[in-house]
View (cartoon, rainbow, N blue to C red):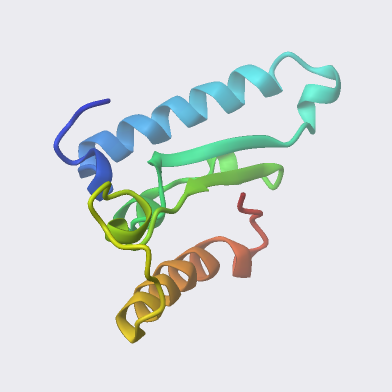
Length: 118
């Protein structure tokens, strides 16, 4: 759902469900070809590969497959990393708190449960 107004905010429940369905179909197709693909590592993205909490929380690892790796992109804070008219300064207490919050969510959902993240 490229170009949707919610693309950069983690999407909607419906769009996150679509990504989960695509991930499941892709993993099943790869695994069903057999050979090394039975155990191959496969990267699966959240909605828009976003590290936004809603996208992280709603990602379902297909079939609880231990060889799936979560693929994320993090551009926080926006004014520093993406806003063309933004700032070249990073490091305020609020910058650090926001980054810690996003990384904590990723850690708690995936890494602490043995799921790799790239």
